Structure formats: C-alpha cells, structure tokens
Length: 360
Ligand code: NAD
Image (tube, rainbow, N blue to C red):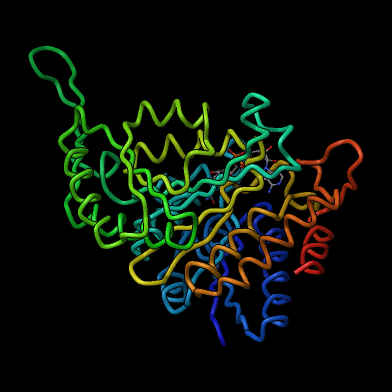
C-alpha cells in the first residue's frame, strides 16, 4: 500500500532524528511491500527563518493532505536564540499549538515502557524495576482546565484568579473511545483516572467512560482517583495497561510515567484526531545542546514512527517489526551516549538508525 507522510523535521536535533526514522520506515516498507512517500513541512524556528512565522497556512494544508504526520521537535535555546526575542505568538512553540488545533488533535498517547536492558536507569526500587512495566497514558488534549474560561481580577480589595474546568459529554466520549480502541490492540485493560469524589467534571467523566465501556465488552475497565494513581505509578506500574484521563491530570501523570522509565529519550508519543489521522513525535524536545553533533538518540522518533504504523495505518506486524528491532539493538548492547552503560558499544545517531534498519 501507499502512504503519504508529512514530515516536520523542525529544529535542533529534529532533522537528525527524523532522518533515521524515515530510514527505518523505508526499510520496513521494502520488507513488507509498502511505499511511504514523505513531504517535508517547515514548522517552528526554521519556518520563522524562512517565512517570519512559525506555521504557515501552506504548512497546515500540507499536513492535512497527509495520511499522518511525523515530527522531530521544534524550538531552540531560549537564552540565546533570536526566536525568543519575538512576541509569544510568533515563537516556535506557537507553531506546535497552532498545528494541534488546526489538525483537531484531541487525544495524546504516551507509552511508558521499561526495557529490561535499561532497568538500571529506573529510579524505582529493585523489585519493581525487575517486574518491568508497559503502560500508556491517554490524555485528553483540548478540553478541561487549560482551555476553560479564566480571569484575574480584584474583588473586595484583593486579587482573585479563576480557571474553569469544563468537559462536555462528547469531549469525554470521543477520547474514551480512543482509549478502548487502543486497549483492544494491547492487553485490554483501561484504568480511567479522575477525582470523582470531589469534582463534577470527574463525575460526568466517570459516567460517560462507563457508558462507552459497554461497547467494548472484551476490555476490563476500572476507575481510580488521581491521587491514588500518582502513588500506584511508583508503587506498582505493572498493574496498568491504558490509563485514560483528562487534560491536566494527564499532563502531570504522563511526566511521572516517563520519569519512572529513567530514559525519557526513548519515549515516543502520538496525538490523534477523529478517524485515523495522527501526529507522531518523540516526547523530548529539540535538545539544542547536542544539535548537529550526530549523537542524539533517534529511538523515540523511530518508535513514534512505529506508533504511526499501528494507530494511523493499521500496520500491526510492521509496527511490531520496528519495535522488535529496537529491542534487539538494545539487547545487542548498542547504545547512543544518553543510554550507554559499561560494556556497551557507543554509536551516533546515524549508526543507531542503520543498526535498527538492519534488524527490521
Ligand atoms: P529537551 O528534551 O530538548 O532536552 C533536555 C535534555 O535531554 C538535554 O540535555 C538534551 O540533550 C537531552 N535530550 C533530549 N532529547 C534527546 C535525544 N533524542 N537524545 C539524547 N539526548 C536528548 O528539553 P529542553 O532543553 O527543555 O528544551 C529544548 C527546546 O525543545 C526548547 O525550545 C523547548 O521549547 C523545545 N521542546 C519542544 C518540544 C516539541 O517539539 N514537542 C517538546 C519539548 C521541548
């Protein structure tokens, strides 16, 4: 089959890590008989340099015309880059917010997986690390506290600040469906996280998620309060498969879940729209401190490409092949500097891409 992939290489290490992900996709296409066509799209600092704005209408149209978008990362060093002398709406990050909105990306997926070979980097106790974990946080991305009405004003002689946490049934329902669909491709378990003992929005969240669950009888659903979930993530993360939650809880829990792996440079992410469209990118940033040195770890971007095959193109065995190739590279002791340990062979970005391609 033919697939059109929009490629936002971006800034910093972005072009280096996206190049390797494209290499692995091309190899996977050759092996399984697919053709992946790439269209380069400028966004972030590189778009500011060329067009004066971080995201053009043409870039949005090119992204919309693709079957899915693969992204590196955007942005530079805020202390030294001229991009950060511009007003906030003209800075690189405004491009990211703009494209998420334009593409209707409402569900953010962040897997958090502890590779046995990297378990020494896990900050949890030895027995917990030994057990391993493989979970995925599904965060609602366009509603809740970050998008509700807000104001700061003086009332009765003192300042008052208000943020509004609002969710509609339809916003909850569409992200809940995504969580159950993803769980069907995994271990068929959803933990919905809320604060239903206090918040009205959480009580509606729980009710709607329970309704949606009836459409997926094979998937086990349980609900958990967010404070308990934060504890359980460090106590026994192996109990989780898909963790479904609203925007702010997801923002916090997904960073906690990333941190317990001890190697954030390994973590992919996906942001999904209605239907099969999605934008796939590593969880890390543009790492300006190491850009251009050829030492960035491309694995998170390569795993993001595997997520794209699984969730946007329904190419399960092709996605498995990439994920297995990554595991094989790790078990063969091949590492970039950020995850290198004694006795391993240290390689650069390009060689890591070659080694993974060879194992697909
Ligand atoms: P960062 O993730 O870019 O870097 C943090 C540390 O991790 C650095 O030491 C960096 O060298 C290292 N690192 C990150 N990715 C790596 C990789 N693939 N291989 C090896 N080491 C890696 O975070 P930051 O320094 O806070 O942000 C830098 C820039 O990235 C900022 O402009 C920020 O706005 C931007 N950013 C963009 C995105 C995005 O595009 N979605 C996300 C986060 C940050």
